[in-house]
Image (cartoon, rainbow, N blue to C red):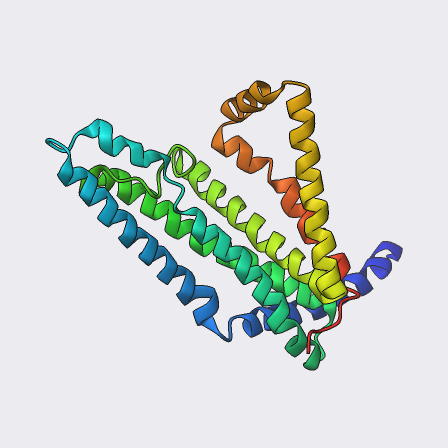
Length: 257
């Protein structure tokens, strides 16, 4: 009885917060073109450009030389879609946060509503990219041996591996983009300069350490041993840190006028 009495207020608060979190999700989706239309348009444009390139390679090689078209399996063109997800993460916080506060939405509910949005969008786009990878393989690279959705980096393996790989990768870019925008909300341009300065210094320190210890071959071997799926799994701690960092900073952030 005592346990139920102690936990019931927390459960009641969570139940009361759930509709507000869903309302934040709806607020984010007010302009569906930004979150749903533009990414699909970018994806279609990238695919069209790649298809023209594949077609030129296929038709200009004797008998559709397989050795020539196999080079497309090292494509990284899908990365532009992931980068745009980081932009969505930035826009979600910068554009919607002031309106949310104006509707008396708490910072906590805004953070959880944004996280829910990132999860929903990651499921949608991970499903699209996974389906496209299977179509690409079934059609032998869209009939010309092209690779965009199933390359050496991603889009291979079992269905759960393909989907989760895309899903985790999308979550990473969403939360990193959102975390970057919260830094701007909290500390404006100075915070951005310090953030990117710290990132550059950390990267430079890592490169220097690896170079001085002659461990580049070991780093390369780690990527080979882990594989693309293993590397994506290692991004989960970074995603969690970005989400927690963004939430903590958002609690003291002020809207941009």
